[in-house]
Image (tube, rainbow, N blue to C red; front, side, top):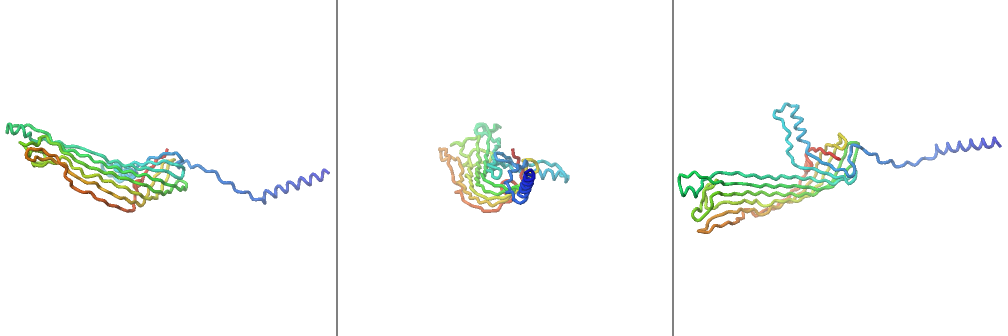
Length: 280
């Protein structure tokens, strides 16, 4: 009996070893391996144009005098990751400015009362200039180690408006229908030039690549195809003049406006020549 049990035990062990060698084991799916260099779902990114930094570093080594960091492009880049392989992105550019100049001119009322008078009044010129450009898009990624290729599409809108204004120290009256001003004499004076509102709407597709040289910090570049349709509103000038005894201010149309379109490949696209992107 004892020998029989020993023989059965040996047979069971042998069968078990045979089964382990012959029966294939079904491969289990590998768990997702996190790459600490790449952004994750919920991460937010801010980007900026990289070319000025490369120019600055290059000028440091070639002996360029008065080397300075000229950031130039004022486009802001943002990105929000819906998951590790997809994100929405937003590019925004603001270019608003304004200014004024003042000039001393003869005070006509004081001069008519006393030709030797040295009294002055002030004429003023001012302008405002507004430019806005925004793009909203969606992009998807494919990873290879620290490299990320991506593709996607976006929509864009442009806004541009420019006006200039003139203010005069000498009033236009029946007794002085052509007063002195900083821009000469004349029976008609311009008060405002409104150059019309220019707008554009567009859509585009893009592809690009990024390299993460630090955890969640990358440098990238992209190119794409963009279509834009532009339309410009009417331009006009506001002016003043005397008609016998009546002072009149009137608007004079100067340009009826126009429409245009463009379809072109872009390199770079709207995320700069080369850009830095910081994710957090």
